[in-house]
Length: 159
Image (cartoon, rainbow, N blue to C red; front, side):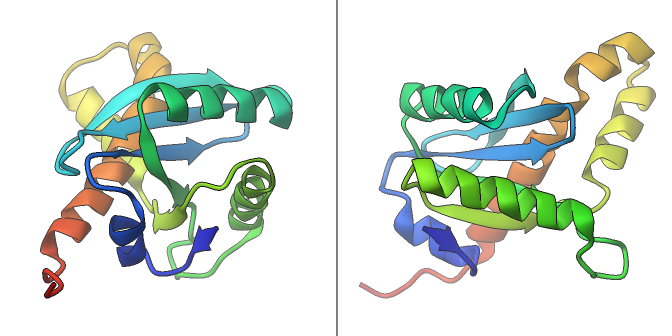
């Protein structure tokens, strides 16, 4: 089930389950994982993209292994807020994923996430080779942390 309102993911994800973020690129998928209290995001791994079926199998394995209750997928919105071909590609990937799995998915604006992460890595004096090896999963963690911070600011619903 795709979710339009990101706030709904907090309600849908079962208590004590993690969220996983994906930073979808044309060659790689950066993966990050939250803690069970949905407060901290950590980079997990970078998946080299091959065929959709293999990518989906790896993601299903990670979802099961880490008891993930929902996915946050970075949406590469243009600086003016419009959605171009890259957004369409990300939405199609999510739709195809939903055909094979019933997991809640929310999209999150990923504008400048890779640039911000890369800038931080340069400031930390990481080599170009090291940055290339970890930038995708670090960008996924950046996206997920933004999402978790958003969830933390939401008012608590009365019971």
